[in-house]
Image (cartoon, rainbow, N blue to C red; front, top):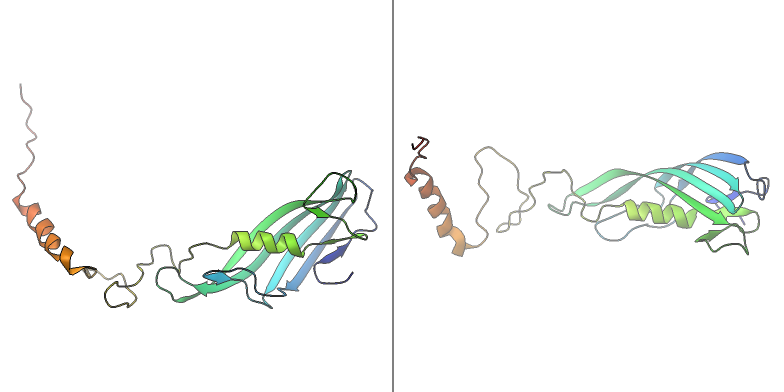
Amino acid sequence: MNGPFILPVRDIVHRPGEMREFELDVPVPEKWGEGLVAVAAGEPIDLSVRLESVHEGILVTADIATRYEGVCGRCLIDIAQPVEVEFQELFGYPGTEATDFEVQDDHVDLEPPVRDAIVLALPFQPVCQPDCPGLDPVTGERLTVEAGHEPAVADPRWAELQNFTRGTEASRPAADNTEKS
């Protein structure tokens, strides 16, 4: 087997306590992720991997860094953000206790757990900035935060409520803070 995510473990198989470390720069083989953001095919992934031989198999610990692209879930402008994630997964020896992944032919294939970790780390509702105001419901234009700017009323049937709330502030009596004996 050969591929960018396949790492040899022949020299540490069934040798508990042995360890190997790898630094990899691997391109994403195909688009990972669905929805508003995804990691594009060919986007580089920086992997820092530690393989440790344990009695049950090979324990893989990895730090992953890459970048996702897509659109803001509020204002729909293009965004690109870094994503960093880490995982630890046991690749069991064939014929031992059931694990999600197995050591195969003296190698481990990191593509499935790396892909799973990255896709699960992608935001479900990505935003360009935490306080993104979104789109104007009437015009569809991107809203901006400006001093004194009031957002347009989405439904004209609610417009009369704007007048009601403005007039109540001045007509309220001041609170009586005197103590009664």
